[in-house]
Amino acid sequence: MIEIDGSYGEGGGQVLRTSLSLAAITGEPIRIIGIRAGRKKPGLAPQHLTAVRAAARICNAQLWGDALGSMQLEFIPGSAVQAGTYAFDVSKAQPGGSAGAIALILQTILLPLALAPGNSQVTLKGGTHVNFSPTVTYIEQVYLRILQRMGVQAKVKLGAWGWYPQGGGELELQVTGGCQLGGIDLLERGTLQQVRGVAVVTELPSHIPQRMANRAENLLREAHLKVAVQASREKGVAPGAGIFLTAEYQNSLAGFGGFGRLRLSAETVAEIACQQLLEFHHTGAAVDEHLADQLLLPAALASQESHYRVAQVSSHLTTNAGVIQQFGLAQIKVDEAQKRVSVMHLGQFH
Image 1: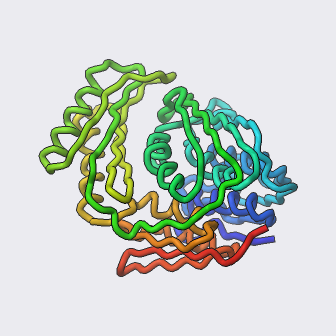
Image 2: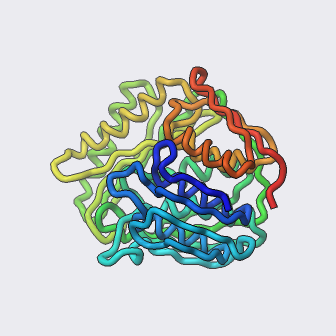
Image 3: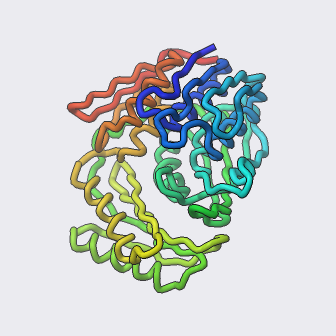
């Protein structure tokens, strides 16, 4: 049984998600201790518990320690990953519901399902656009489009928007199984083609997304970037607002966002997202901070080497590299000075 220390590195939920994905893919049983020890509220939160149960469901794993707040978990796969039709609802993980991010559950089960023979359809319910986790827009516009170049065929369709704290969002994920993963080279991003964005509200007046869109377009045009932001009112169970921007370079993609909250003007929300985008743009890097650690797992499973240059070497990146290497699947080199990541797969997994 592979022993994983959940307090390792930045001590967050990513140690758990990467371990679950790899346990499902390799069939290796794992024991994780100190889950999310680095967080204010350690242990399994609703979205982590849902990810555990989702990973267990697709490979018929036996679980021990799968409870809210649990800091220890044993996960023993019972079969190879099974393609199929699945539904996972974060709000069911705790009384009174939850807006836990469904993108994190998607990232836990996507690669196992993509590598398994047969197609899968997964319905996910919970938070679609919440702080401190990838938004569904980011998954659709950046993550899945880059993974497609590595051989992963998956599509998402957003049914309803779910914001913090109510959640209530819904997503359909379709995965084509039996994929062959190839490496990726993202050392040079090339020139910026355009910035595309959506400014969205649910259950709020339509002048708000329009103001977010206008402010973002003005700011980015002042910086001499080509930009188009669409303003829209969408379906959701509660009021929410946000703007989500995708920078499309010749060879790469990067995503940024800002969330509305009480007493924060629509213009300020747009400024937050634009500032993130401009800061990244000025680094000259090909891969944004979030994609940097999300690319490690597919790269570790790919048949060729991958090389990419990141905007910054975060603790998420180095933590994820450490966890992946515990499974003996890949050699990962992170060059802090050059901000360069190289990943080489070390032979087959069963």
